[in-house]
Image 1: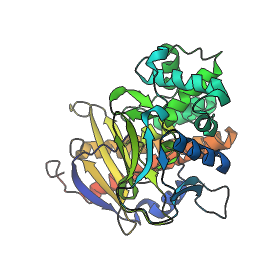
Image 2 (image 1 turned 90 degrees about the vertical axis):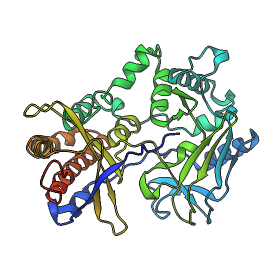
Image 3 (image 1 turned 30 degrees about the vertical axis):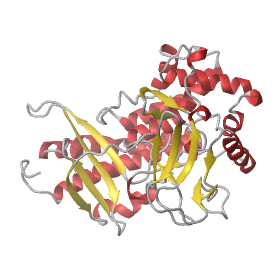
Image 4 (image 1 turned 90 degrees about the horizontal axis):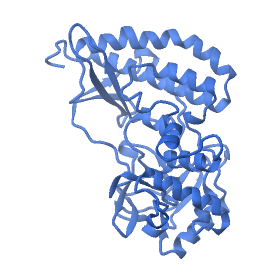
Length: 383
């Protein structure tokens, strides 16, 4: 449902590995993906059986396993067990098999309606029509809204005020939204909170209702990625929801889905720091009479593994913007480094891991932007 926003690019710049110790920086970024890590193999089998029983289908050439079959602690994902041709329907569901607002129950036709619908199904337990799907959910979505107070405070310090849309992705906004927009009693209705955070972390936008969302069985098991390794797309009609192979998928390859484009959003909404490609946006304050504006770029790898940077044509920088990133934002993060190393020692290990991942990813992104300026034309007009 979510797809990477495609914007025209102005320039591609190679980031040379020797600059700012590229290899070491990349090794520090231990990326986390969103997946149903709690899913038991028998539960997955029950889910597929249920999907078939309600008029849906899951291509049998898919298996949910750990990335390293010999390491049960490694990341779980969906992998192809045989070659799958482009255009194959990997998942085909009737709309009735999707949790969404139920008008007959008085649900509003917005994301709050999906939350209320999911709340009812969780409360029904084994009596729910969707019980095989509800059973397989991880009931403790790990997003910054669920961090300890100390973890939230430290992550806010890493965010700073320069990243674009930082207020839109403010930590704690999901719980406030549940309370003010959906009517949740945050203190006394844990199932409501649980359903709300699950919807934030796992739901898919509804192409027929821009304010709506969908909880789609099996679809939300695919890990996120963008770029050349993304190998699925969504086909949605009034009657069916399909996950289609967008390219030939070889046996053993992981099957991916895209949760959207912006790297900051993946952390605040889904709880993970995405691997390359990443999209970064920064708000540049008024400098020397120039009004506040936004710059943005994508980081990706080429076929040889080198990191490349592409500036967005509508958000490309001038020399003063690059100087601001170097002397203000990068300096702020460097000063913050010792404080982060000290404070994370007192955090739960999961929070420590993600905060360090995001810090390193952010520093790497800014250094990449600054480094790209060294290889760029010298005048603002050329840039």
